Amino acid sequence: AEQTPLIAQKLVDILYAAGVPENVLIHLPGMGEVVGQSLVENNDVSQIIFTGSKQVGMMIAHHAGRKVVNNKKINQTYPCKVITEMGGKNAIIVTANAELDETVAGILYSSFAHAGQKCSAASRIIVDNSVKEKLIVRLKEALRDIEVGQAWNMSTTINPLISKEDQERIRRQVTEAHTEVENYGGKVIIDRSTENLPGFCIGPVLIELPKSRALNEDSFAVRELFGPVVHLIGFDNLDEALKIYNGTGYALTGGVFSQSQDDIDYLSERMESGNIYVNRSITGARVGIEPFGGFKLSGTGPKAGGKAYLSSFHVIPFSEFVPGGLKAPQEEEGSEYDFDLAHGSRLTAEMRMERISEALENFIDQFEVLYHGIYVENKDLLRKFKRWLEKHLVSFQEKPHSNVVIPGQISINDLNISREYTVVVAYEKRPFFNILLQTFSALAMGSGVTVLCRNQETYEWWGQFKSILSRSGFSRENFDVYFPTQKLLSNSLRQAELSTILIDGDSEKVESLLKEIFTGHYNETRLKQILTPHDSPSPEDFKQMLANFSWVRAFAVNTMRHGAPLDLGL
Image (cartoon, rainbow, N blue to C red; front, side, top):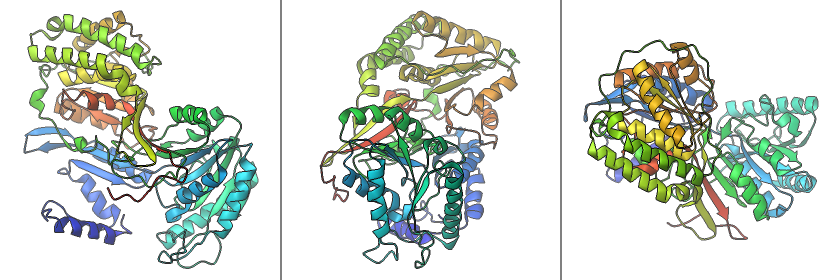
């Protein structure tokens, strides 16, 4: 951030001292709209990793997303890659049987440490109405006594905000939040925002709102404030709690305080957040232990500090992607028949595995006819993929993936939630092999796949593919093929919940289509993942191909009564 160049310079100095050459690592501080904008627009920049506001992140995603770059080292052209982390409206669910003293301690740290200036900070407390008043009494007393002051004072819990501008913004928003309470019900439990405090300090604010208002997109209970301001909302049952929890455009962090394993299991299976913490604070993710990152409008993934992060900086040489890539037919104007995108499967992973296994077997039987050639290595790879799915798909999606083991905490990744919608834009006579594998991967993980063909010949090929899937038990609700007009194609690519687009075409087609996808109109509720034959995972990296169609969630479950240690000499 432009307000904090010194800590960045300190990190760079350490890396230089460790031997990183100065010509491969450059710290370039400056104003975002000057330095940042220039870097985003530079055609030599092939990847951008951003942490900041949703507004700036969406601008970067759309502006850089339209670019293709040429890697002179491997003589390959592919889309500019963007990784964004854009904040959250994070919540803690408190069930009827939560241990309230532990809960209060977790809320105080999660919501007010660093004055709430963390993208992971808890700004919503969703509490069972049967214990709501008891929790309010405890929180009110704690917030009345909590120390607000200079960061270097060891008694301080809530340190200053980053700038006077932010202090004024928070005070203005708190005043508006008071008006919201007056107009829609609820109450201001405590407001220390106007106290005479040193520097840019703001005292804590806790506001209760009824659930009917807390789900409104204009409510301060839905908007990210980035300060020590928390909204509390009551609920009557767990489904109501989940509706409130999932009722924002963000999906970054969240938590549960409960002593019921049944309640924890029911909630955690359905909570939409990239990081979920059970019976502990919801901030403080550590590399390898709680890989960090969200989805929806919280970010693109992959999770920083996780096993998949480094692979997002790699590009596989294009020569590995045969067959496919024949001279594509000319684009043709398709049908004006309107359609809905295929939606995700509601089948279990085991049921999907049976269908995808049969589909792969049928496809392999017809491989030479479909690809007009022998291509022994590719056919063998399909067989290997089939065997891998039969052995590993169910456990890969439904069983936990362990992160770094630490005392007092279960640390796992979960891949149970599939991306809802995937679109394949098909230009080629026969798809690039990597695009074919990723289409099978999307179906295996339960994503709904819609193929949008750009000419009649392509439409006929994918029609044969659809027939194979139909005979194998796939319905057109989960997979379908269309040959739309350009207008219908453009409309489909801009659908708000569409999260993954596979482009089966050469670099020229890719560049043209990126301009249709990233228009500068930010209507998304999911940031779009673009995969092409020119920058996809290795054809044998089955795990990464499958993970591309899941919303990965990292769980941190406290198993020690006094809490797992946060400071570890690992």
